[in-house]
Length: 210
Image 1 (cartoon, rainbow, N blue to C red):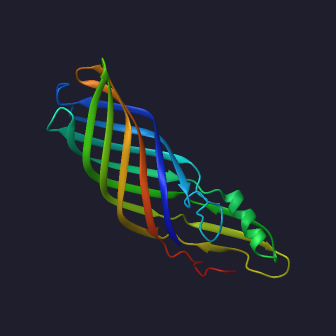
Image 2: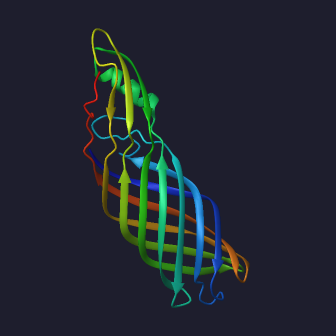
Image 3: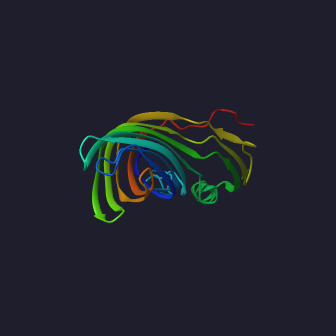
């Protein structure tokens, strides 16, 4: 299984502490929000899709600004996406003429990121600034463990499993957003993030067939 797709992270809860004055806005912060799979990661076909649904993201990052508008920093994050087991079951039944029904239990997909790169900030008006970043680094992905309990027209296994698989690759992360200064040392940091995913997995039944 080859996965080449994108993630969009939409933050809902953000918090940031400024480490310096506004002239050089270095910061550390935490963020939590909705992580939306798009492309093949979200597709619901056996040949290319992963049946992933929107999940959540949590991350922490910090940046040191060596100029008023430019800095360097790093970010670590975790994304989790549940599997659309209803659509996966439907597609399984449609794909096998002897399969009448199937019940699926699935763990979620998990994606970890650890990246570093460039940050920028451009004042807009008053306490509001435009922010952006371009990062590169490690992306680690883990596919879900899945348990299938099929009902066949004639004879067939009582259940079978698909075990979890893992892979890691170099990846990119880009983001644009806004920053609002609540005080000289505290603010809010809202940024929309796009993450590239290119992973390869060897998914196959575990052999536990009864």
